[in-house]
Amino acid sequence: MRKLSAIMVIFLSYAFTAPAISETDNRTPETKYEAIVSYSSVMCNFAFIGDNAEGTNNLRNCIDTGKIEIKKEYDNLSSKVKKSSAKAALKEHYIASIAALQGIRPQSEERRINYDKRQGDAKNRLDELWVRFQVEK
Image (cartoon, rainbow, N blue to C red):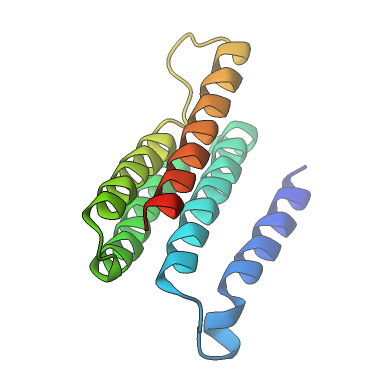
């Protein structure tokens, strides 16, 4: 399991960073923001799984790094958005993405079924807010 997790982390890291390594990153600010939100979530979920399996404590670092990277891309995208309704929708998405990232760690005494529902609700909320931003821009 540990070897499989490590391989997946390496693969996903490469998949998301390949444009920056091999050539100029021509993605739009919108695409970069959307990608870093997804990437941070995936990587922190892997960190959480690894922490449980290996007794490490990588999740806190992952969340802290994710928050910094998401904020950087949010600021970049927000500066390019002209309509105030679109800015407001983007800000709501940003807040929800940080809350979802921080919510990866289960609450104390949280049952697995409740944790899975909470994670699903957070994902659905992010999807809804992203659509709202798309409509408003």
